[in-house]
Length: 178
Image 1 (cartoon, one colour):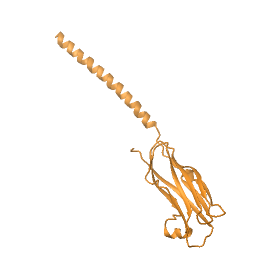
Image 2 (cartoon, rainbow, N blue to C red):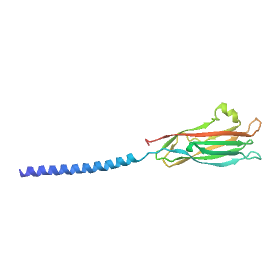
Image 3 (spheres, rainbow, N blue to C red):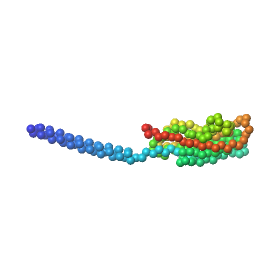
């Protein structure tokens, strides 16, 4: 009988210790879940900086360009003035992920899209090219560069001053699953 009493007391002590450990485990788990719940996920990818890195003049007058970052860093408003063949402007645009979630650059939208034939005629023989950032993943707090090149190509057309309005928009999406 004494032996049964000791076994019963031992089982009760083991069960009490198990309940205490389970309680401590659940408290630790709830604290971690509360921290994660209170953390605000943010998603903010935008243009933060633009700089003209190079300007090559094809004649006596240098090409020129103006630019500004608008709509909270989601768009660039630019205008290029090309004077002669072989004029070239190069710009370096910095895209930054200011949020705490990774982001994917879905697309860079050009307006007007001078790669389409109807708009290409308007600026011919000038061409505008962008570096390919489409589909790139931008981790939280990181930056990447977009290169813009504007070039007045040699052609059989009459050389004339070209003033080219140009706008670029940034389309991104969150990559929470990463």
